[in-house]
Length: 370
Image 1 (tube, rainbow, N blue to C red):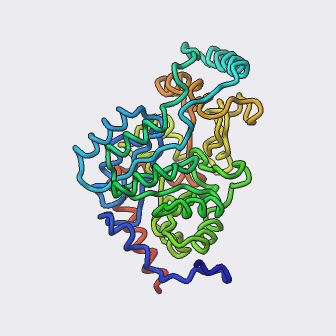
Image 2: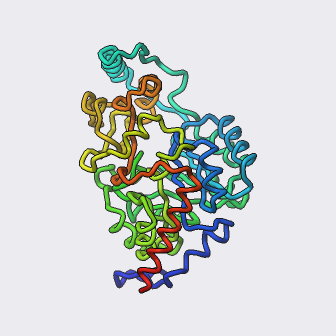
């Protein structure tokens, strides 16, 4: 039974170090699984460096998941993770709204000098059930999930295979739901986090809770390890999260600028000059709330749920524009996902970044110890 009477969790400070080390991971550091930006080269480099690399597979077809998992395995035998978006297998779209958005997107692309135009895809997104089967076949050390909860049967299959399950939560209520389902750990996504909000039991605007408020609340509420995510860019932030009870820190934006990341070069170049007041919640790229840079595209498009098809419909419609913008070096038309402290990104090779982060972390821990 969790003791909720006081504000502080009754836990020894170093307790959670044993959780990641039991997986064969040397450092309390996880590279966030940023779908579309975490190719096998980044994942394997991070894992080889002693942290936990993570493949963001939310956009991948099942065979692509298997292919990329094989590439990771060809480069390292260290543990790594795969992340999926928990979604229905089928989606129904409001075709009248789709037509209106296509017209608006086509007009924008014409105005901006891009020759590509929207089209209706054969499918709005890969089937989650088939992605899940591919994940099980790939057999990563860790499976993490966003946007919702797997079924009890799917959780049972992961447990049977010995795959560690990490759920993503943006509130204490969501964290408790993951704990009740049997997750091995919970990643709490603070409001500072870049990319898609993982909220599934609230409206996104109701779960924009700062990490350093959400983290100790969650640690007090559940009895499984809690991972901190959102705005952490250096070893000092990792140490601070650990003081508040984190088992490990998950960093995403910090790894986006690495040469191994597949983020578009123009997007990487913008990271170092992101002004924190221009990082905002955006719906107009994918139909789902996400944190990123307010750029030319964001300012040109509507940004309310009532005006936009939901995820993944809008995500599929904007895909041609995003690809064309990347090829043209037009970062101002890209979904430039980033966390609140993006300007602290360093652009180092992944292994060098892991080493630097851990050096900073150890110095911060020594400073805290007095």
